[in-house]
Length: 285
Image 1 (spheres, rainbow, N blue to C red):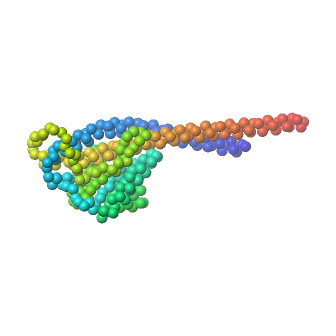
Image 2: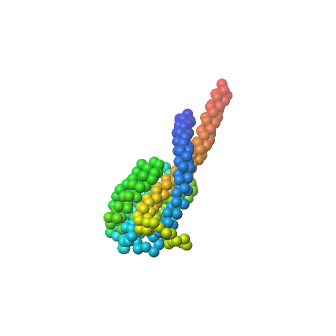
Image 3: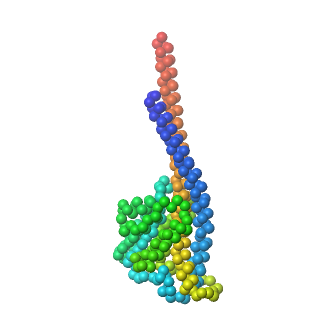
């Protein structure tokens, strides 16, 4: 009986230590989550506005005015940029993104000559190195806090490959942030840039002309699309980890209650057994 009590006490102490870790991780993720969500909310209007401006400027122009507007048909070389986290313990966050990317590649593969996966995040990089769905190209890991420099480096690499004809189409696969409890895996066309249909009735007079202006706007739009994907992915990661650690903390609380009840029952049984022995001994005398 004594050994049973010691085992239960050890389990309770072990679970209590785990609970402290999960609670601390939840608090850290909550702090990062608030900062990341503020950045996402601030970025979304800018992303919509820059698309609106490009649509207005490029309206009526030949796509040949800029190499990143040129559509190549048929698409033979596909580049898929997959955004995951560097660390785990965030529920199904990474698995959902990877599943989305693999489904997209499987659907498109019959029409393609080559697929290149660009991994942003260590979890995605490790997965695609083990499970080859295509050639694994460049990768970026260790982006603890998203900056414009990170987005610019990734975007310049993708734009250069597109200009050189090494890719015919570039897709981003990332987790769009909805809430702390919900992240939506999405895929988005990055290159070629396809401006939305201009809906504004306002006619712009541009000096210099639209071609030089597009030369400035389009690379900035590509860079910002990557920047937004990084922000959305990081906000989703922190939300998913916060939720996962909250659930883990609740599970440890339930386990501690269960084992504490078992400990009290075992202790009561031990006390009862000792009392029976004492009474039996007294009656024998």
